[in-house]
Amino acid sequence: MATGDLGIGSSQPAQEPLVEPIPFTLLDEPLDYIFADHFRQRSILAALRRFAAAGKVNRSEADMVVAYLERDLPLHHDDEDEDLFPALRRRALPEDDLGAVLARLREDHRQAQPMVEMITASLSAHPARDIVRIDSSTREVMLAYAAGEHRHLAIENGIVLAIARIRLTRNDLKAVSRGMKLRRGVS
Image 1 (cartoon, rainbow, N blue to C red):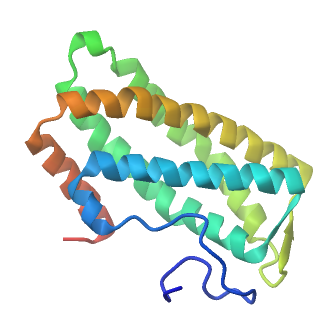
Image 2: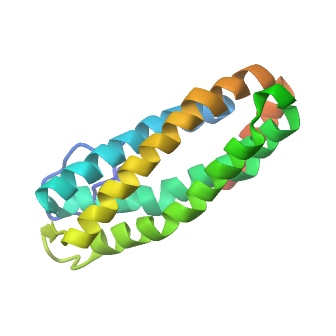
């Protein structure tokens, strides 16, 4: 594992990351990048369901999930809320009926934040311990968050990205790509 990969710094043996980094070159294809990140989110959701069922998790996995939720997820939400959704609003046709869908997805991002904060606080507690114990209320939040996000991702993949692939122009996609690159400090 390279030094920048998730999981480094743990006292446990190196373990495969729960999510693989997406190559920055894919930012040139912003819809593909977002779709790839949705796959990564599903991996995180599967891990949260597994943690909730077990009531515990090893430190390195907990740290990987926290890193994703604190670093990558906010970037992803900004990619959608600040770049993709506005571009799609400009290009959508009335029959696409996306106004309410996009507003709902943006609200989902906002409403999920307290759950994400509770999950990361729980997984970050007692950093010196190799095993993180998860209380029942946090397990319930993990399961509720995973269920909500699963529905959310289905709408984004099945409706939003499908329509975006049809409606967004090459210039729209370049603008979305620029915003995503700028957010990540990539030129």
